[in-house]
Image (tube, rainbow, N blue to C red):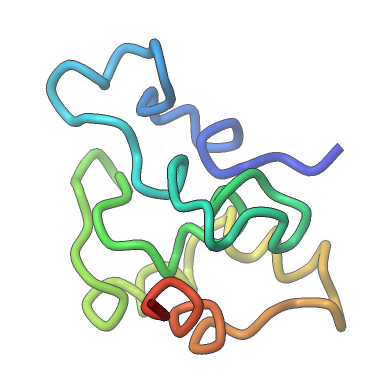
Length: 100
């Protein structure tokens, strides 16, 4: 079974977990426009396009600010490897969440 970022990284920002009180729920967990992308729940397998995700203990900024670091992330690399030719490119995903 494919894992979502919060399961893989164990960041504690999913509903009912330890980081909710001071960091809030992760935006990847609640972004429904990316549900089922790479077989994930909401944006759970496309977290690199979401502003406000938690990486390295720090809340991250916008896509343009964080994507360079995301490309080095073990979870990002796992998703790309698992998806192979079915990998959805980041700009197309970013456009989905910006669409009205």
